[in-house]
Length: 292
Image (tube, rainbow, N blue to C red):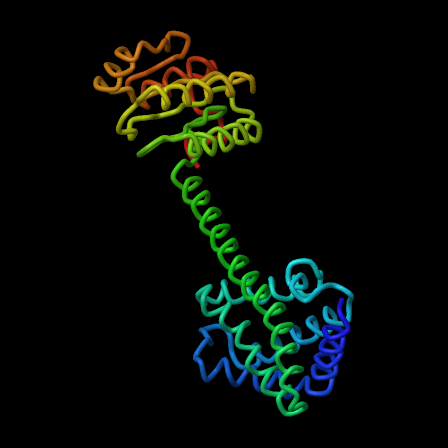
């Protein structure tokens, strides 16, 4: 670190210490004036964020780490900016508004520095350090926001897939998965995981995969089904596929896929009858009910 940068950092450290409350208050006021507040984030929350971020920046500047690396590598600075961005993402703020809010702290800090020195060279060097520090902080806040939203979308997508592929208990030791719509790799994985867990939990002997609601079956879909059947068998249960309509049967035949090793039935009712035969149950046992 050069002597000039060291002197500038010392001035910034003293500024953050001596004017902590003023900087925080001015930054909050600037955000309110720029209308970056969103529902769920009130003025008190902005004040708390300001106090945390300024304290983290002070700790970062007091370290030997270069200003341009603080946001990415200094633990307290990085964690504070990350938490700020996540809170605003959950509250519905845009990533642009979040990063601009962080960047607006430049204006506040430079305004206070101008009051403490009239030396143009010192102000320029201070602006360079502040820019290095807060530019990377603004980028981190944007990246964190985008990553968190992608995670939320991915989690919600998976939850929707789980809801669209329920595992239903039809009979004692008999489970069914009614599939509707398009069957792809991700959805097949969810089906397989849910079905295998249910087989273990219910000690199921037969699993019925009903594809009445599946619009089309191609090579990929058929392979996914065969993989699921293989996994069910590894769990010690039998697997029956129902709902194979004439167009789907014709498509499978044209594709040359061999499903001869898999038990298939035209309807779910036929598959249930086959399952009862496999399990050796002639009636509903006492205390048991069909379905859940």
